[in-house]
Every structure is written in structure tokens, then in C-alpha cells.
Length: 262
Image (tube, rainbow, N blue to C red):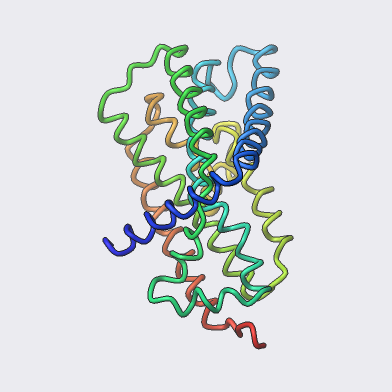
């Protein structure tokens, strides 16, 4: 474990040096992400012009959800998303061969090699939105609520990583898997809305089979005081199972990887 942490720290230092050489690109990435954040906020602002409650959540509570979504997304964009978008190029160019022969987990190095430092600014914006929502809703979360929130937010990040890992596993077979990546981002949009707007089987699917509701909805409930013990336990189990299935599929796909010479 210490070896992996030291390796990850080396990745950070390398990426910081690289991004500081291209400061214009650094801020452009931040601005592009802010456009997406702005669209999410504008959508709900328009909705709240016509109603005072959405899925049982008032305006302030919705900002707690949005802040959670932005925080989770910022961590993913910082730590994992840059590698997810590069992975297909690794296969096509044969560079995945060099990852496989490294004396570390191929899934680890394929998922963490590059870090997007501009997402630190995204994280700051997400925390600001979250705190404004807590203040507007008049919430006073206890230390235990905050601890559960942090735990479930980490789980939300792992859910995103797990879905990306499944797409990466499929890319090993398909090679030109841009379409699958676009499909992932389309499906991911289901997790950018509160789970309570869905009902029946759809909500159950988003909490278990395709647990995108765990990205933001469930962590937000820890601060809103609506998280039940049953949902907490089931969410942690689903996160663990999703991650194990994803890494298992990835390792299995590598056994069928033909390499650059094929």
C-alpha cells in the first residue's frame, strides 16, 4: 500500500509540473467544467421558479445535492477521468503493453497515471455550493452525519471509477470504443438528478444494479437527515460489489488482450 501511495504522489508531482507549463490550458479546462456546472444550476433554478419543492427537496436542500454532485465529479475529474479518456489511445497505440509489464496493478496505473490539477478549482466551487445549500436549508449536521457523508462521497467516486473500469474492460475487446465512452457519459446523466424523482423499478435499479444514485443522492441524504440505516448498509455493499466486479472484469479482459503486435 505504501508503495502505491508513493507512486501516486510521484504521478501528482509529474502532472503538476506538466500543467504549470501550459497555464492557458489549465484555466480553459476549469472554464469548460464551470459551463457544465452552470447548466446544472440553471436547470434547477428554472424549475424552482415554478415550484417550491422538487422530489420533496426545497431550494436549499437541492443545492446540498448539487454541491455533492460537483464535489464527487471534481474528485473523479481530478483523479480518474483523464485516464479514462486516454485508455482507448493506449490500446490503439500499443502503449497498454508498457502498463501491463509494470510491477504494479495494471488497473491502478491505467486509472491513476494522469491527474487533472485544474479540478482542484472545481472542488472549491463544489464545496462552496454545498456550504451555501447547508446554510440556506438551515441544516446543522452532526459529526456523525459529516463522517457518513465523507464515507458515502468516497463510495460515489468509487462507483464512477467502477463504471469507467467496465468500459475500459470492454475497450480491450472492441479497441475503437469511443461509442461506449459516450454511452457512459449519457447514462451518467441519470446520476446527476436526485434519486427521488425516479419511482418504482427505475429507482431500485439506480440504487443497486446501475447504482448511479450513489454518486450524489445518497451522500446528500446523510447531510439532509433522510438517510435510513437500511439504505446506508445496502449502499456500502453495492459500492463494494460494484468495485470488485469492475476490477474483476478488467483483469479478465487483460487475459484476452492480444498486444500491439496483433
